[in-house]
Image (cartoon, rainbow, N blue to C red; front, side, top):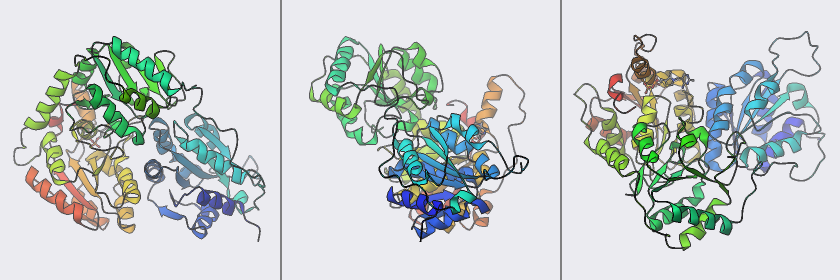
Length: 537
Ligand SMILES: Cc1ncc(C[n+]2csc(CCOP(=O)(O)OP(=O)(O)O)c2C)c(N)n1
């Protein structure tokens, strides 16, 4: 029997190694979901398309293939904007497929009709319509486009009519016309290494900032080079773990996390900042426009822009291999020494909470003491993100996930679920504010349904604390930033998972340790005062 378009799409996805697609159905995507099922691709049913998209993108990043999300037309497609935008700015590989009203409908039939491709074109690497004639080629092309660096989102619309039509794509091959590294021309690694060596030889106080574009596989080579040359090193939150944060050369996390002012002051003392895979979408500020940057990239920035000057474009891993083979051209002074000391002081000397509330740094300390160093941590967006982004001691690449480029609330829980799908043998910790938790806590039921065991920490400060602190700093009266509590324990239980509440660091450690060994998800509510974040965020 001839294959339908839906069947051809499922076939192409399966051939590309896609084993799961995340989503929420509508009548128009039922043929596709059924085709996936028949092709052995699991459809992970979520409670909101945004969560499904966020899960898909993090899953894709972790498994090294594009994550796939499926939504219906109109409202489902609209709900995908946040994860698509997130995937663009955080360079997570995502293929979004939504339904669309059939082309055969008269234009007067406007119910649920939206110009979806026009909406998505500016925030994706490519957005196209599936037809019977292109259904195989276009899927291959979109998958390749999503995963090629800088990885990011692609979008396909598929009408129910087309999905039931016969596969009319008889092209063979691997797709065509793919953009490889955008407009960046890569120099041979030898040439790039000698440029870098010369720049470091001329510098007095250099510092390395490892960014999102540095590949996980290059982490050992980066560590070797840093250690051999004794270079002060920092990382962005998306590159946490590329360098072991317990290494004495590691100075801190830069670009918008806790104690950012101190970090930026440190960078300001440098006469050469090497941005290794650094992308400006990671930087919540403008220091990269003022400070002496040298960009080392192997792909364009997320927005497909490349720096106009001070650029070394090459295969970073091969360049580092050549650099590490040579001794350091000289010794340097460390511009980050004060920042590093201050960070260490704060991390080790934080006061305990006062009995009813935990302190921000005490919370990090208790969780880090309880959980293995290999734990994958995800955060939501808010003060807690700044806290964990700076102070969680990441030890290896791919173990820390936050929404940074977009900074969209609602990321933490779906990201943790995706991490557990991809790395079932690793402990996964989601750290959420009570504001972000209330955006999609219903996904706890999804976690239970799929047997995902996650440690979910909800920091209960009854406030959008990051905004509250900003409001206070700007001299406004407190207004529109506080809310009444939602009982996280009851919420957990309502979704069929375990919930508990802790009152101090040792209870938190104990609870987290137990949660990490349980077969199911556990929600731990941590009471904190919103204002206690103020000194560090
Ligand atoms: C989708 C979305 N809406 C609004 C914001 C603006 N925003 C940034 S942080 C924040 C507060 C988050 O509150 P909560 O989740 O309780 O975390 P906390 O700041 O208390 O740690 C808000 C509203 C955002 N980043 N994303």
